[in-house]
Image (cartoon, rainbow, N blue to C red; front, side):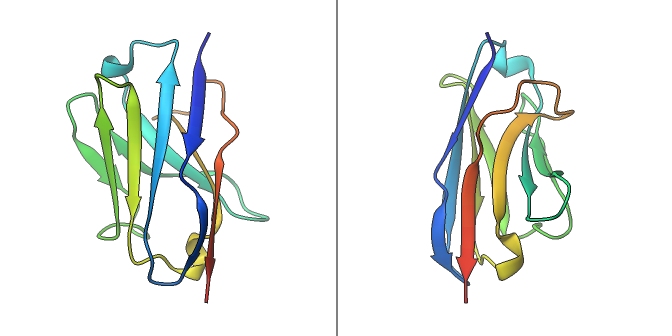
Length: 114
């Protein structure tokens, strides 16, 4: 059974940093291109970063240069290091594969305050 467990969110001031983790089980993790998504209040969930099994990463423009996605295939875990956080980064953050085909986890709330 596929399971995605996100953690690491919280309340942080603008300009601060957080590191999110997502532990994945039930799939051959190393073969999957994984992604981090976020859903802000009143908005659709969007893919913001992805990383291939070999470590090639891609980002949307709004987070490029501030966020870094990484993975540990031995631990079946994908990370999102978020620096220079902005108010508009406030959202629930989720991990999934690059196309969002896995069963969604509960997400982790990130709230950026001024």
